[in-house]
Length: 452
Image 1 (cartoon, helix red, strand yellow):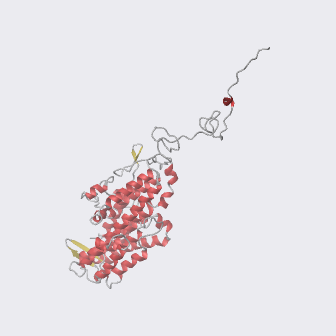
Image 2 (cartoon, rainbow, N blue to C red):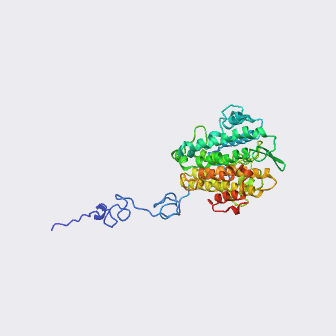
Image 3 (cartoon, rainbow, N blue to C red):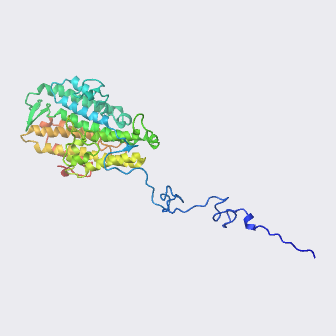
């Protein structure tokens, strides 16, 4: 019988290709129906092995199982932001404009100034000798074009809104020169412009008792400073145009910052631009420091008064400073929802600051009605007038074009305390003043009684 020979065959499983759908690990699969020639096997996120696996979005973070990934920078203790070891913060233009505004105020208080002098300083042109400071004269900056000159007032609201506001301030200048200066050395009486004593100070008022210079400078707190902060440099619509460049870290030519970073810094500069310590202005302020340590004197706007608001609403200054820092951090981290949330905090706190000062001066004026210190009373009421005027520029949080107060409401308040009484402040009543103070407070979560 012939011999039988057996030949060993290869393992059938080794020769079989993976099925990828049979629920069995076969062929070159590295898992059941996955790996090898099949789709890659999903790897579970371990969250603690130093490897990005599973659906982790980063090493041991993100996805469905691990803690969220943290990226970007932390909020700094002070307003200091750097890129490659260089500061990215710049708000020198805002410091310049704040100093210009103070010099315009100085001209309004000098009865040798002409209307042309003051108009030129308000509408400064590069190289014109309008100021006592050569650096200001050489600057191409000015105040008038930034008065009701924000993104909102120049592009979103009807043009008449900005035109009307600028006309108001031009009118204050003309009124001071033509109706107050000629009677500078005369004693003011009801219906007649002139001067009134107020302790060691002298107040110069128009025929209706208004210090026009106070209406001008306190009105700029809203029309100039608050408008630029709230309606321009922190406005989401204004900032949205820079999002692509900011996402890609596009640096402005010759600078260290992105456009969006710079816009936020400019908003910061309008609040803290003349602080002695621009990186940490609140600590010095709350420790009793001067709001501005410049040769031209203290700040005349928001920074000057935030310390006063602390007396009734503790934490306001810190909340504003923190919102500026957190918003700038969010821009660096490209978190635009957080940026806008911080802008809303600025809207809320700055609106409260302006409203509280308006109420404060209304109440101070009311306490003096019928008293012997008319100069002091009229001074308080003039400051109230300017802060009330400023209310129309305050944006409501979480809104596109909603404001705390309309222009018509504001003009109505001014009618009540100034235009309707026969001779303005000479005849205003405590009832008039209390009515307006209560109406302003009603827009907020505090009462007029809470304001000292």
